[in-house]
Length: 391
Image (cartoon, one colour):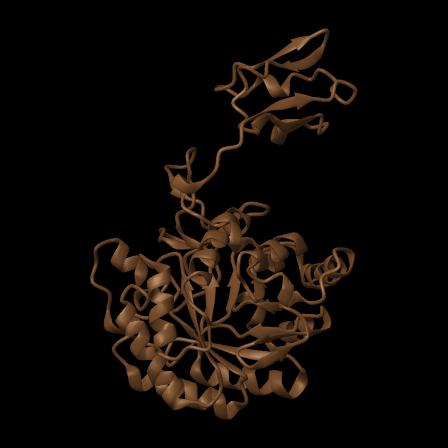
């Protein structure tokens, strides 16, 4: 069990808002896979243009999504009602509205509270509605300036947050992303507005590769033209760690984080950088809801094996080591080869910057006086025959 925004979660895993939470059948599968909560597919007062899922996807690396179907208000409300009737999950309602229409924000939040939702997740992060126009230096239409356009202005994020808090009695969590110029500043503004938590989407904005053999047509499937899209998947994991740590150092309210999580180790690392809850969508789209069960059981096993009393003990554990670059303490050392494990494959000789390694009698040998101690050969060695030693 773990506490977040005044609610008790049976475990720290939330299925993120996206294609995997767009229907009641999928939400039921999430519960069966042992998720503690889901965030429903983004709901808008009115969907501003026709969308369908058209991602460029490279499993194991990342996905770029320029558009996806959003839920109209009635659809989103009905989905929440069904989810509350059919499951015991904690339900986040992921909602957004034009930044100029505070009345729509207020109306959506109240209606979702009446429908039985547990948490309002105010989406200040979606890059696909309006932001693509702004990145092209085109003025976005008023109905498109929602999502990530809001987090560009901390005072606006604070204003919307405060309005939502005044409108509903249930917790309000603000969803932010790497598209913000200073995510810490926006998170602080949301906290000042009364937010009960911060939801971090660690993905950024990207473009797919062009087909170099077909007139440079972008590799979006069944789509004519190209647009910037939300970039998700494993390649965003390390930047998500940074965002989580940055926000955790600047606010007191808890964090739920998504961006690159595909297994229990990713989830545990995310919690150690400051997330109370963890979330995923892309890995579930690739590999199914089995991902959820692997993560939840993996966290439970880790807690037992490492003698942690609860998930709370993991949250922010790594932050004690966080400092600025100029304050880092350099430890002198070198790479050392276990000659019994080394098979002389020569992979450790490949790094272009290294002048310390050579083969002697078909075994790798490191000259400690020339070794930089960078550790790249350690990461490359397929036989785990190299380790760093301090001097």
